Image 1: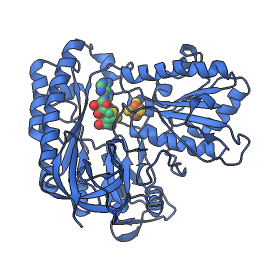
Image 2: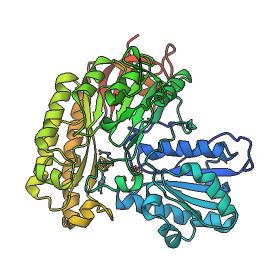
Image 3: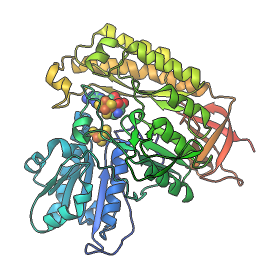
Image 4: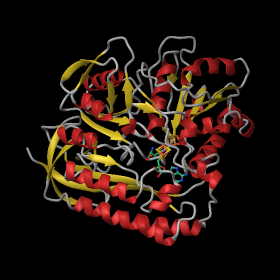
Length: 486
Ligand code: SAH
Ligand code: SF4
Ligand code: F3S
C-alpha cells in the first residue's frame, strides 16, 4: 500500500486514516480501538499520542470500525465543511452502535474543544468528548462510559506538550515522521478558530524533541517534520536543573539559556547528516534571518518554506489581524531568495474575506505573480463562530464571488506549480526514496529537497530509505520524472 500523501503537514482535507498497534497487558487487554483523523498534521500526530496512551492500557487497534469496542474520531473545525464531514461520518457510526450497544464513541480534537458538552446534546451517539490537551485522561473517561455515564474533558492547558509520550508510529512508511515541537497558538488571526480549539502557545522541551528525532533516526527514519502552528515563535527557557544542551556544535549548560527555533533546527540537523529536517508552519511576521541562515548552513535542512500569505492586500491583512502587510511579506520573500537561493516557497490563500473588493483580490493574484509559489493551499473564507472576524465583520462576500475568486487563484497557481516543476528539468536532485510509485512497482518515488515528488525506475543498488541522485528528464502536472545517476 502506498502511504505517501503529498505534504501531509498541511492538507486539512485528509480523512479516514485508521491506526494499527500491537496489544499490551492491561485491564482493557484485547479491547479494540478504531481511530480516524481529520484536519492538519497536528491532529494526525496527536492521534499517535492517543494510540500510545491507550496501548499502554491494553487496547489494540483495528482498521475496521465495525468490529471496534471504541471508536474515536479526531476532528477539525477550521472550516464549516471540515465539521460537516465529521458529522456525516458520525451518522455512519450509528449503524455500528445499533449492532453493539456497548460500543464507546468519542469525539477528540478541535471540534470537541469548540463544541464541548454541546456535542453530547447534538449527537446522541457520542459518549465521550475530549479536547486536545486532555488525552492523558482518556483511559479514565472510557472507564466512566463503561460505568454508564457520559464523559467530557475539554480543559485546555498552558503546560501540556505530551513531551514524555513516545508516539506510536502508525500507518507509517518507516521513513517520514512528524514531531510536534509546540502546541497552541497566540496569534489570533481574525478568521481562525485554532487559538480557541488549541489554547495558548507553549513550546516543548528541546532535549525531548532531539531524543525523539534521534530515536527515529536509529529506527531507520530519514525525515522528520517539526510541527507547530507558528514554528518561528518556538522558545524554550530552562529553569534550574542544569540540563545539558548541544546548541550548534558546542555543548553548553542551558540554565537560563533561551533555545529559539533557529537553535532547535540546528540541534535536530546535527543529529545526523542523513536525517532530513522539514518544518511547518512558518509565520511571515516571525521568520527571522537567523532561521534562514540556519537553513542555508545545513544541507539536511530542506530548502522549502511554507509561508502562508492569506491575502496580498495590506488592508485585508490588517482586518485578518495577520500583523504584517504586503511590503513586510515581500521583504521576507526577498530575504529567503537572498539567503537561500532557489528555496521553494509554498503558501495558503483565503479568497473572499469580509469586505474584500475585486481590486484587493487582484493584489493577491499579483503577489502570486511576484513570488511564483511552488505550491499553494487555497480556500474560500468560511466564517467560524466565536472568532474575531465573526464578531466584528459581516461575512458579506457572496459565495459565487468567493468561488470565482478562488477559481482565479487556483488557475494561477496551477501555472506556477507547473513552471516550478519545468525549471527542474535537466537538473540532478537528491531524492529520499519513500517506496514504490502509485502507478507502478517498476518505479520508485521520493521527494526532492523542494518537497516535489520524483518518480524513477527501481534499481538493484538502492531501496526505500536511501538517498539517490536523480536526473530530472520530464514532468507531469504534479510529478518530476527522471533516472538515477549512479
Ligand atoms: N498556523 C497556520 C495555519 C493553520 S490553518 C498559519 O498561520 O499559517 C491552515 C490554513 O487554513 C490557514 O493558513 C488558512 O489559509 C486556512 N484557514 C484558516 N481559517 C480559515 C477560515 N475561517 N476560512 C478559510 N480558510 C481558513
Ligand atoms: Fe490560526 Fe493565525 Fe494561529 Fe495560524 S497563526 S493557527 S492562522 S491564529
Ligand atoms: Fe488543525 Fe483543524 Fe485543529 S487545521 S489545529 S485540526 S482546527
